Image (cartoon, rainbow, N blue to C red; front, side, top):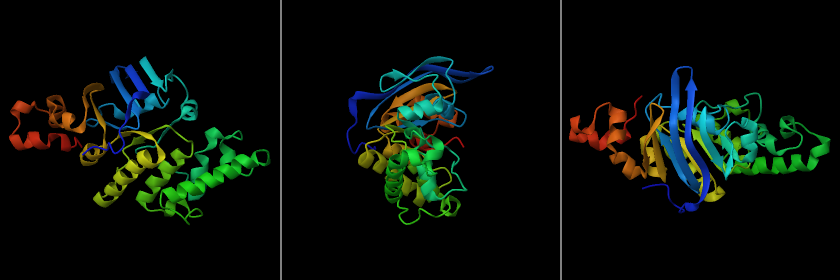
Length: 282
């Protein structure tokens, strides 16, 4: 089963990446990679370790500028813009390693995420600014609403370091939501989680799409989650896109099986072929 609880609108392109290449000296991390994501999709980017997935994310979010290619978000080319400019246009992200402000409360962590929408700048999200009191009050209301959405009601004053691992993951996502994104990029949202926490995160990601109207683009190594939640799966190997389609199509793709197990399908035992797309290179 895919994550297609509400049918994506295939006439409404949110992200259109065409032929991006990113080099680091002699290393080509991403090579001529393209993909299109439509409004309401949960789209996943998978591949063996070192395939270029996070580099691809970093190009989309402005941390890297691609050496070649176009990145269109809602019809406008964003390649070369700074991360804050891209965030202000409606793209937010989380990271493989949780990035929280550990000297701040859970509520303050969320409020900081709204800084791109505030005229007072980053400090206006967490420090009283008399010239922007209406903005501050609106941000505070939103932060409390997001605390409720991530099931942390009543924990606004708690130091972020005192939250459970799964709650810290949700808090990082809530901080990203505070900037009112249209597209949310999640870099390995279940990294370090046990099966119960992973199941909870899968339900939470569906809620992000179904209840908040977000389009989701994620990198994930848990193939069970990817195959259960995704409308579209794209596969990178050595920086090149080798496959794309529904979870069912990708699971059967010979190039994907070879990328994960290192041998062409005809050389594998029958049981290996059946489970290849569910195994991780790590």
